Length: 334
Image (cartoon, rainbow, N blue to C red; front, side, top):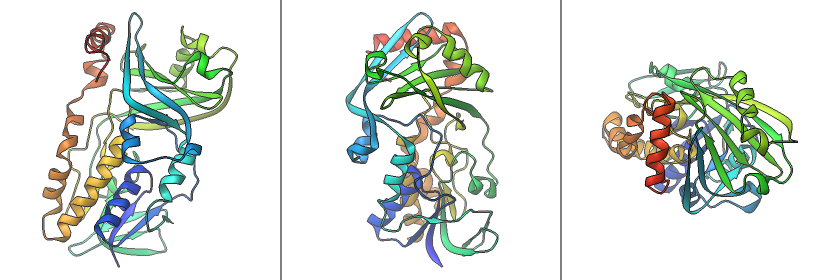
């Protein structure tokens, strides 16, 4: 019997574990994988992530100065107040998993049952009991499904890993975002000797990825490159779920929909929501209703629900151009 069980040891789950370490609360951290393990992701860390977690140099693929955002007729640039970084999620997640006092145990969760006094978790053979459960198990969350929470809208994302010579000369230290589609976007992320080139949007797949790679200036920047990897994943695109907590379970990270729709940025919000979920559980252990504590702790992330980006900004070329013009007037800040 544990006080808290955290399912998923990506950024959200690790953040929850670190907060429980700080609060002195017993927990079990589990993940279906062992580390290091691959994770489909662009791997972009804005500067504010590096204010939360100090990274060793070997985890960083490239420093990032900020965003460059392109449409068919405009460009906006947003420089970070201090450098961000691109990372390999294989190395980054393995480093994060080494930080909590209790390292993750391997467990493929197949069932979760919530009772009046405890939550029961099973992989079909092993049974774990906990007073509370934090679901940090990603976009395809088992915990969310067991809570009966429906998540309305996901974008499909896919990307190539492309070995490219002279990455700095072609892209520099910028995360490049391309609004060349309606209801979706493309990106280029610089790495050591390679680039992640991907697309995400409603119903997007490999066809849109190939189209993106053929467009100018993307094709010019990737000329002579060699595709060495492919991956696909889902991105929550409507902000946090309508219900994030039950009597004894709370969602965070991608499981709860904590992603910024404009760029697909999820790691920063995973870290924030994981810590918030842990504090909500701590309040519940002191007698407060978990749902009420969760609403308070997640209040600073409510703005993610108000960003209707796919339709409101990317719904037409005219809307995209208006958005880029506003960014340019604001100095690219958003």
